[in-house]
Every structure is written in structure tokens, then in C-alpha cells.
Image (tube, rainbow, N blue to C red; front, side):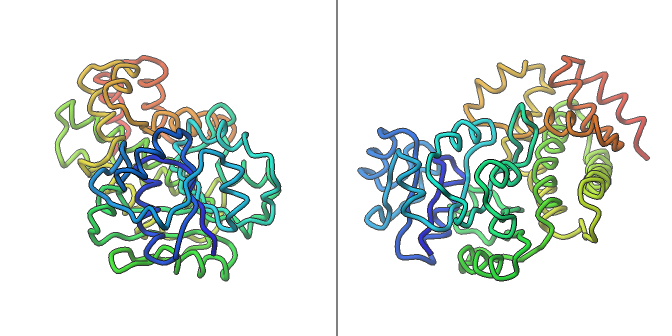
Length: 327
């Protein structure tokens, strides 16, 4: 495998750390040349997971996405969802024969489509050559080499086996799944529920309510996933339930932090500015809400988050109304 990493954030950095356990070298697309220069000099990402050191002699950095893609046959896309489209739209070479793995925990904003669908439709990559990475897995814990678990989704058994081997290390266990659509939508939805959990924490709802909130969240995931792809799936598996729990409860969760700030009275813009990181769930909320206008699935938590984040409704009053819909 000639592996490329696209992106320079914490998740891209963590994935690079994983992959470098299993290949001799990687190609890494980072948009800003000054970031590359600092990375090479310090042997660490100057902006994310600064404690994780890399053997930069085994990394070919480039700020030219087409150069990185041309040198690679397996591509891991780890760009925050708001920037995926603008980044991928710079591609002007044929990548239809490449293997593409999406590690994006969101959808294409404005178009409201999954990243895997966008790659298939715009670049002609066959579905069997497209995979997704799901959690539960925080980048910070990967950098610290704490025991973590990933789920790799793909419809080709041969490809998912190869991708599983690429991502398995002494501190990362990988399971395989053929539920690409379910895992990808679950990865989007869990960020929305983490925002809700953080919001409820700031509003002084206790652990009892948080448990009920996430129980209902799992029902929403099941209903939505079944509406989009009615295949057998067990959402108690770690790729679904585990990812929801860690994103909703962990102090590393930027979506939970974002929700806490909104619950404390911050505006969306103020919270985004102070965090200096992308909370994928903000964009995912609108995307799921818009997609569900056609589906009509019962998603009361998503609807509540949309009213708060985009309708400027009161978090206190909206969450109180939401509590009446739970049992």
C-alpha cells in the first residue's frame, strides 16, 4: 500500500500515527506550507497533538493534493466536513481506481450528502473501493497510545480486511462491518447527540437524564439508519453505541464542549470562535435535518438541536419541551 493522509487536524494526525506502525512511509497532504515546514523542523504537528512525535524521514509532505494522490493508491480522508468539498474540488487527476477511506465525521454542508456518496458520484470511485472509519476513538487517546477500538466499514471483504490490517496496532483493535451507510450516518448523528449532552450538562440535567437522552438517541439512530438502508444491524456494537457514548461523555469531545458553551449562553459564533476547533455536529445537525425533511423519520433530539442552533430557540425551553417526549 502507498498510503496518503489528507488533512492536518488532530484526527488526521492520529490516523497517521496509526498507519505509520504498519507501512514504511506515508504521503501526507497538508494545505499550508508553513505548517509542513514547522512539522518537519519539530517532528510534530505544530497545531494538533503536539506531544505526538513522528519520524518525518518516513513522511512525504506536500501542499499539492494532486501530487499526494498521484503517489498513493490508498487514500484516508480526514478533513473536517466543512472543508471537504473545497479540498476535494481541487482534485484534477483520475482517482477512480484508488481505494478511498473516509474518516470524516460529517456530511458535505449545503449539499447534505455523505462523503462516500460525494466521492462516488464526483470521482467515479466504485462503492466497493470506498470505506469508512468509525469509533469509538478520540485522537488524543491515540496519540497517547491508550487502548482504542475502531470499526472499518466496507462492502468488499477483501478491501475491509486490508484496511483492517492497515489500522491495527498494539494499541488499536479493529473490527469490520459491511454497514457503510449505517456507520457513516451514525458518525454524523453521534456528534449531534454529544452537543445535546453537553447542553444538558450546562443546564444542570443529571446523569439520570443523560442516560435517557442517549437511550433515545440510539433509537433515533436505528430509525434513521433503517430508513436510509434497511439491512440487519446491531447498534449496540461499539461502532454505533460506543461511538455515541464516548463522544457524549468524554472531556476530549469538542462537540460536547460546544454544547456546554451553548447551554451556558454562548452564541454559536462565539462558541466556535473560542473553541478554535470544528464541532462537526453543528454542521451535521442541519444536514440531517434537511435530509429528514424527505424521510420524515421521528428525530426529536435532532429537531431540538436544529431549533436551538439554527432557529435561535432558547436551549432551556427547548430542552424542557424535549424532556416531555422521553419515557
